[in-house]
Length: 303
Ligand code: PSU
Ligand code: MN
Image 1 (spheres, rainbow, N blue to C red):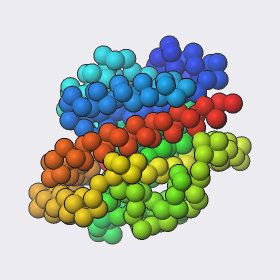
Image 2: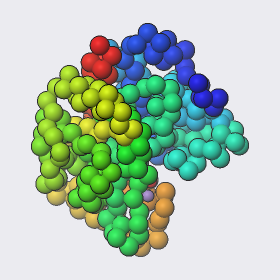
Image 3: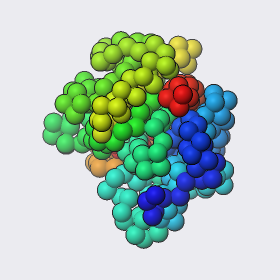
């Protein structure tokens, strides 16, 4: 086992017994939602994973230790500290370990640590991608690179249209990452079920998802798979309202010269502000929905 890794006793036991485990990220807690909804959601997501037959492993960096499985107290701490915790991508891991510091894991670092621990399935809300205007800013999330190199199945609700969804799909295609639509042929756009962009394959059951990922592992592929699970109809938002909020958020980011790792948290916070509580409710519900699917898929994979 890696010398910087701490696997919680419950997660270690489950993995040793070949039981299903689902990884969860912590940037969604510190940077993705306000306190206290972030902590409530994180704990509720863990409960949903248990109800669906898997063990949750919330992942973070605490005091320079890579945690696969956080305690309730650690989740509470990350949620309360919020954006004061370092948003940790691949480039931050070595520094945080060397300095014994804390970090909230993005999709990228959650995949890295999940893989180190032997966890195969990871549930989140939305992934990072190719930003609009990337042809000049070169702002492409490290999440896409990690999906290309690390064998973890990531269940998300697509990506927010703060990103260029077409270019994000192109990038994933180039890097050999399969994009599987759950019950759909279309990439969902996080708050809404439709983006107008097609996925590679439609998959209709957790069994089928598990079979696809098992084949990828058996082929010896080092990359991951992206599962795009549309937000349940009853929680999906009005595309016009959300589109207007996203356009306004992008304009404000540009006017304020926001760049680098600040871009995504800035846009997420602005969209939330501009849509009132609506987008937060939808955000929470789609994470629950992804947790259910990830737990069922992990259970099939463990069979
Ligand atoms: N997109 C969302 N919600 C999020 C994130 C992205 O809709 O919480 C977070 C995730 O942790 C993701 C990270 O891995 O932002 C991507 O950041 P960047 O674009 O800087 O790579
Ligand atoms: Mn970026």
